[in-house]
Length: 499
Ligand code: ADP
Image (cartoon, rainbow, N blue to C red; front, top):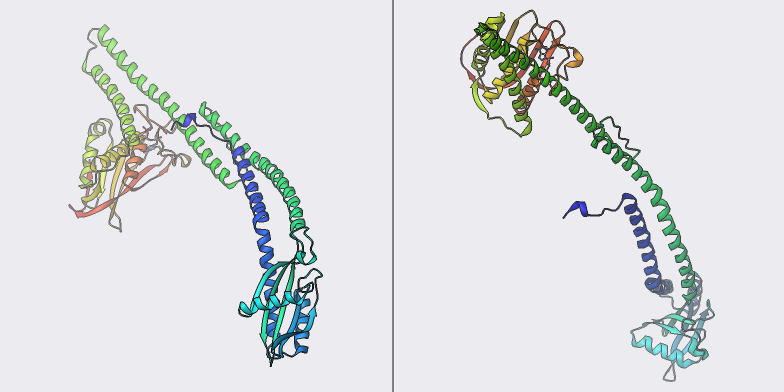
């Protein structure tokens, strides 16, 4: 899918839609409840009310089925549950079952049992109850009794009749509760629902607008700041407002902006430094070459040597840059083998023999014997080379460099490269490992300095997961160190070699 062509809804629009959907869902639920459920719920409440009344009466009559007891119990139950009750005692007389009215508990004037027109209705109800096994219920209307047609809902009753066997007789109890017409209640609820619907929609809009404005303002402010970054202005400040998510986002963006601006400054510095460092040897090469071309007898070994030295500086600078981009452009893994770190140190030091002899440097190596360690030999050699090279370049007047190899108690080996040169200020210490970082005024005149050497060291040691660090004091010198895993093999015993 082409994301560019896709139209996105704004945060404010989405929030508004969400609130309106919520309001709509609430309203729909209320309307469904009102339209389909209210009648059923009312009828089931009435049915359970009449059943509770029946249970109360039967429980309280118990074995005492005397007329007086039934009268007392039904009178109380009728008031307690708001249910009309009629009770009859049935006895056989002359071969026929005859019913004697014991009591009438009268609550509602529209009740069925108090408006029964004749005994036939009562007889019919009794037959239905007997046929149903002694308990019968029915919804019934008294409109027909009065011959009125009127509203079908009016005069609706719910009746429950039970037969209770007694001492020498049978009792017939009829419970009646009126089912009130719900139409007026329903109309009232409908008006309330319309009002609720309007209030919910207005509330949804009123809540959604300020909430979304608050959020969108924070985000659009951040987006404005991000646009500044896009056009190269890294002096930006993201404000995350008062929500934890946007505050987290703004903190991350502020850190990213800081890193990008630092990188930008460093890159500019690099271009300035590299072009300066390349221009100086190029100017010298050109100058010497012109002298050798124009002045007879100047094409001597010394001048050629200077040209070669300058080209070496240039190529070492270019190599540093290539190497740095190699470690940072790819996700390179070290090729771990076991190798003799002491031998590696001696070989690396030997690479500086020409400079040390020529310029009078002394590099000593102290160790308690050769050690076999695990690591990528070529890369560790590069680390040693960069550290020793820096020690030479920044050793000032002392010209003495000491490399120490120490066994640690946890079977690891610590390598230290110490010089007694210019040292590094405390505030610069955390920064020297950054790419392109160079402490102002410290790099020696002769050295082509890229500010990448320690950054390469850091990349290599980090990819090995090795501990490393520096201790330094301005004017006293520096000790750069790293700790490498011992592969567990000793080779030679204690030695101090001056190289
Ligand atoms: P450079 O090419 O400038 O030497 P590095 O990354 O190797 O770059 O070092 C970064 C900076 O750290 C150097 O410019 C220098 O200021 C400082 N530095 C590195 N090693 C030493 C040292 N042994 N003594 C003093 N300063 C050092």
